[in-house]
Image (cartoon, rainbow over all chains, first blue to last red; front, side, top):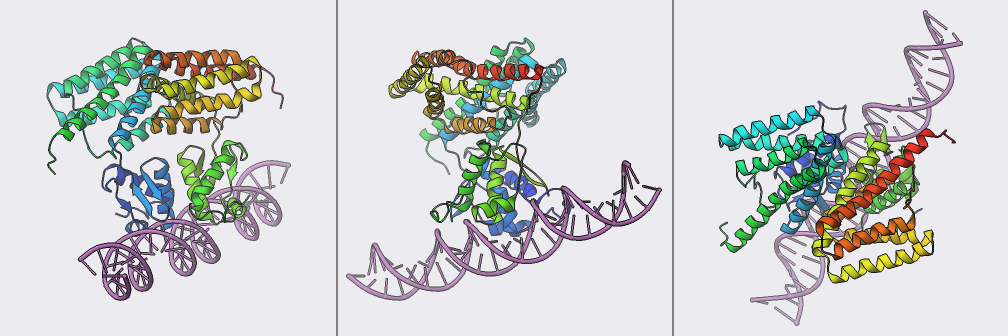
Length: 227
Length: 227
DNA sequence: TGATCGCAGATTGTTGACAATCTGCAATCA
DNA sequence: TGATTGCAGATTGTCAACAATCTGCGATCA
């Protein structure tokens, strides 16, 4: 795992930051795990300086935290923190919908339709493997189409943090067609140029994901642990 | 400017981060200015390592940015970025209102009333010097009373970034009593336990601040520069 | 037996030095 | 004269080493 020597245009710290973020978000370094600076430095063939700088950046992004003289640890979210993140995500996604309803060009609108059609297709075919990435790119497109990078950055930060919750990969959960029905409602509100309805639909879409999480968690708690 | 030697319980980096944040937010280091690592290190009597780590954290917080081999610069916001920040702030503040309307205890409600009364008092007396800090603590109390630290952190980050806009200190602007009328509307919606109305009132309060900024900026553009 | 103490190894916090890059100015040339 | 080149100083990027702190385990003692 050493892709240096190719670089010199960018800084070691920036490469490390991206690489470590990937490792954390993908779960390659598990939530709660301690991060050994020496080990990382050795692994990437660099010294501890750039590693520590990268970790500080990740700390500010909420992916790791540090305890003086103890080092860095991958953050682990409990259920309440996850719920808080969902609430903020919902508010931001609501703003995305509102913004699109006000500003979206016709090109953006047809692009949204295109995404919708592709997901409909996958949903009809019950092709989950196709649906999942389409769903991701739909949400990503929406956030970037708002033209508000502040909104996009904060939203994307929250999505990254969400990966630190123990119960990984809830997926769309509510069923493909149900999920896409919500998507359609969202896009239609935007097409209608109805900011209030769009905000409502977009925010509600996230809130439903939160409710699924809470419900799943509740159910798990009442079941015997099978680990 | 050296308040070390007292510490050892916390890390140099954390002290530097707070100190540098203060310097940036207060405008002591002007937006756009280049940050000299050596100078800072000398000023605080430490080496460049902790300084760089602190700057990385501030970079992730959006207060400074770095260009490879050129160093760190204090971020400077243009009008469009400021507007984007206001929009996100409005969405987050709206969530704060909505959350309070759902969850606020009676103790929180009466604390909000207390803030309101104090500001009314200052507004009646036209005592701007008293009103301003009261207004700040009102907003801060609201954000923390939501009990959602994710919301609080993101909101506070945006407030900090706002200081990087060139036109400093717009202040409440719309007049003390007008501003407090909005505050009253906000608190009443919370007291009524009306989440939708609270969200609306809270978000609108921020949006009005945005509008004042845009209006002031528009006016300035049409006037001859007197620098 | 059980708890406490203390040491050795491991790990982080911080530093100073060196290499690489950039900046500004002066000398050079068309 | 005006633009270009090439240095010298300044500044950042990275590293390796040292000091301070923590961790775990074994020895000691009641």
